[in-house]
Amino acid sequence: MRVSPPSVALAAVLAAVLLASCSSPSRAASPATTPAPSAPATTSAPTTAAPAPTTAPATTTTTVYAPSAPQSTPDGAAARLVAAWSAADRPEAASVAAPAAVAALMSSAYPAGGLQPRGCTAATTNPGTCTYRDIATGGIYEISVTRVAAGWYVSGVTPER
Image (cartoon, rainbow, N blue to C red; front, side, top):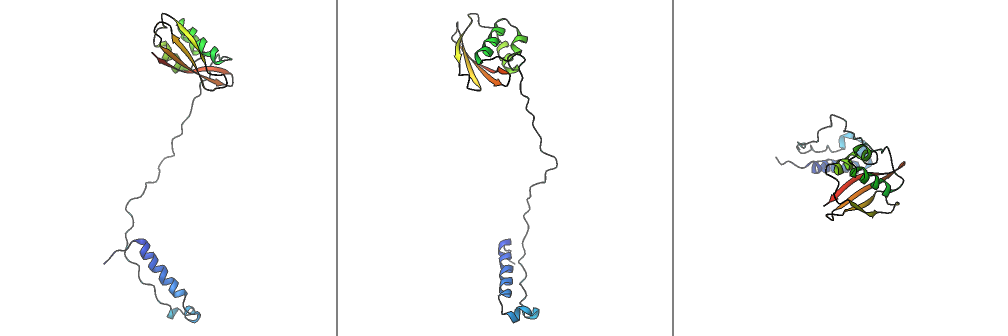
């Protein structure tokens, strides 16, 4: 016995129904004269199906850092963090910078030769970047600054030594 795909079997049944309905009106009214549709070919159902989810999808929450001492300018936020780093004052650094930024700077000693501010992107750019140069080594520190409703804070630090 030949197994036909479901679409072929369905097409055969539909063709038989259409032929029966296209007969003359007198024949369509009489059930005895309507040809019986042929039996559909044997088909098998697909064996793979996607499992139904058993639990609700996980939701994620985002925590937004809120500085305790936001600054009025991007330069002010970066300068306050650099000053706190030079004094090894972690609580002061944390007042204006996200924990990851504080950790990035405080994990190493402030450069012996000091840092030279190289400027920040325009205050209309949010987030922005302030750049500092290590005077002794020429290494660069990219300080990411972000504006929130209360002012500017340091959102990240990338040392490029």
